[in-house]
Image (cartoon, rainbow, N blue to C red):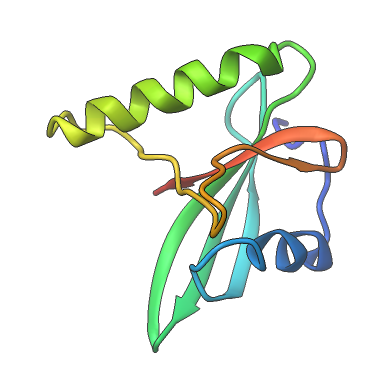
Length: 108
């Protein structure tokens, strides 16, 4: 089981207010994996549904390393290297805190 930090709909609704991705349609914990908590989210904006991955970085991840890795994946995506791109919030931040864990919303 790789959902170490359980979330309620209200937790995700609150987080999504910081983004311009629309409203939450559904979410489901992803049980594969060994290190972080991951959720598959479906959000709807202007009648279009889009899938995202919400990752909560658990205790084995050094939060100070996350800006580098988020920047690296953004840099790679800008150069047409296929990789999941972090989604920036309305304020430009890509790392937030959810349930006292660093978290990022990422392209599916």
